[in-house]
Length: 193
Image 1 (cartoon, rainbow, N blue to C red):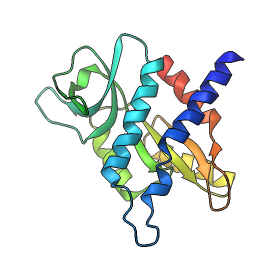
Image 2: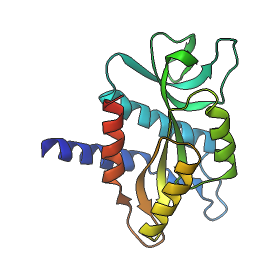
Image 3: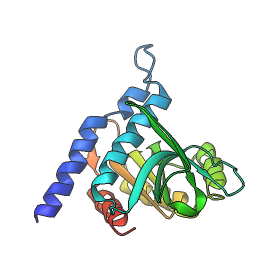
């Protein structure tokens, strides 16, 4: 019972800390939050959560995957790997890593919205050349109907993701609905890598 309560508290805290979805829309001619920064905030926050559950012999970072002949993958929001990275740039505010392909355990793509897009399809196709174990984690499923969630999940899974998750469901006039089921599945997946 305590474990369930702790996981729920972590989920609600993460949702409250982020609250990025509303900042990415234009309101009254105001510029939205810079999308690259928005994505980096989301993936960095998720990396912090992953570290709490990741088996100790693995590491987690933002970066790119490198083949033996030096080819680099597209930018990957989260890379879970073992061993030492090929190279890393670490400053007080940034940590970007190049990870050899044979050390990659999984990749996690972070997205604002739980839906299929042409950009995501292309990115996924490119990324699958570097690792077959790719997950998707979205901040929000913008939907008034739960049935749409199932449909979107199936569409995303058909792209080649191992599994797909989102933090909350949200729509005009409704409160954010935390997605405890996906959160628990995600944390269990991380613990069992």
